[in-house]
Amino acid sequence: MLAIEDLAALAADFPDALKSKVARLELGGRVFDFALRPAIMGVINLSPDSWYRESVCLSADHAVRRARVMVAQGADIVDVGAESSLAHAARADEALQTGRLVPVVRTLTEAGILVSVETYEPAVAKACLEAGARILNVTGTEHADHLFKLAAEHDAAIIMCYVQGRNVREVGDFDFSRDPIQLMYEFFAKQTEHALKTGVKKIVVDPGLGFYYGNLQDSAFRVRHQMRVFLNTFRLRTLGWPVCHALPHAFEYFGEEVRCAEPFFAVMAALGKTDIFRTHEVPRTKAVLDTLAVYSSDVTSRQSP
Image (cartoon, rainbow, N blue to C red; front, side):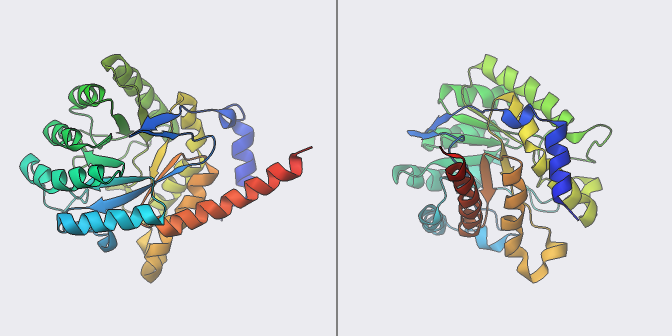
């Protein structure tokens, strides 16, 4: 059972990291100051294979309606993807992804909604940036150079996902030979330096906790790993860039209440100082973050002269 002693020990082990500040980002004409509040990224899946049924939209019109609802519910960003990351799901080629994504991206951008596109394919990224996307949610490493250059050319942000493989659909076992946070830190330090040299000015890092590694199939082991990474997020913020987390589901534990899983994990992520919460459950996650903020407001008021 997670206890307050665990949190106290973690804070005692990394006191300097707790003080880390991250860059403010200007995205689509909006300034995100994560020292003031985190951001919420709502998810729309244009693939019929995505298992989170509430997020699946099978037409552009449906996706646009869903995006408008999420923004009204509190989403700051809408992340749109056209290929499921599930290991058994059908692959979607560049033409299929582009055909699904571009009409949605264009319509949402024209409506003033800040759009992120999840892809690891340069041709898809290029088409979506030209349609108005301001963020690339990159779920692969094999085309990093090309994707960085595209982001730089369009003054777009990169969400750099930690992937132990060429892309999210081609991963094996997760490497636990060393502290996973240190492995992630080293990966991000190298990749962010390369991105900056390529001309990218806006970077977010994402530990990739929702990816389907072969040795993370045991539910207890996977959830324990996810919770540890959430609580250690502040250590990645020493890179100077905001951290995004995709909130997981833990279906084996939540069962029929699976839609409560992401809000639960949002608490873990918030304690670790997450900056962007990627969620299918926007209103539930917003309620959690708003409630946690009440405590910090109370502490601040009590500490004021």
